[in-house]
Length: 258
Image (cartoon, rainbow, N blue to C red; front, side, top):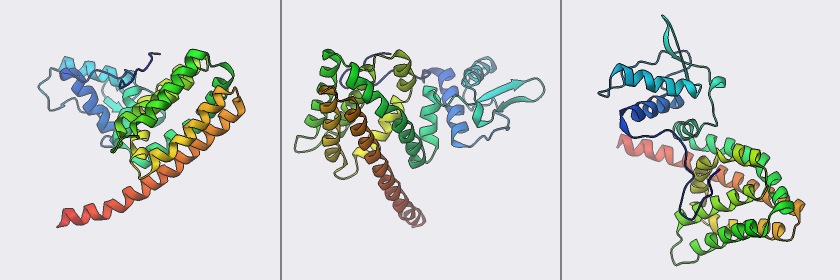
């Protein structure tokens, strides 16, 4: 799995350029948004000036992600949700775009609560000096992003993601690293949603520092407990984010009517 440098996101996902990529992403978003329900036919007419061959190739990409299946006489239909590859980078992105943000973030936080405390515990046992330095550097960059007169939340979010990725890499478990790596693009959405809540980013720094200190001191169980507290805090922030989003909807409807 590629390392993440400052200001760089993990690579992944099907190319969006060209007619072929546009069709793949257009239909994928419609399926994840619920515009085309499981069992319904996927029309090949995308509205784009693409040949039938290009459109059929796009359908093959979606079939490989478990979203659709093509059969003689019945055409191309959306498969049941349990058949979808929900950890595919594109499916994660489309789910993020199509599902209510709070519902998606809750699911993501549940996954983090299962994986990340165990990863922090392993890092507390196994982190090398170089890996510890990477965790420390990410933490310093998080703090620096908030130190100016105006906080740089984009820089904070990227450093936050590097912090958690560095912990996973310090586990020395390739399977865990690859299994967890697929959610990191979606994880950035969680960081962007919660770090914008007033005081949230600054309040998270001591929690991150507690994780770093425990790993540095080789306190594996302490690192797991500190990570658990961090994820639990994120869960509370997501509920606050959800309430804020819900409060905005009546205002938006009123504004639309006006």
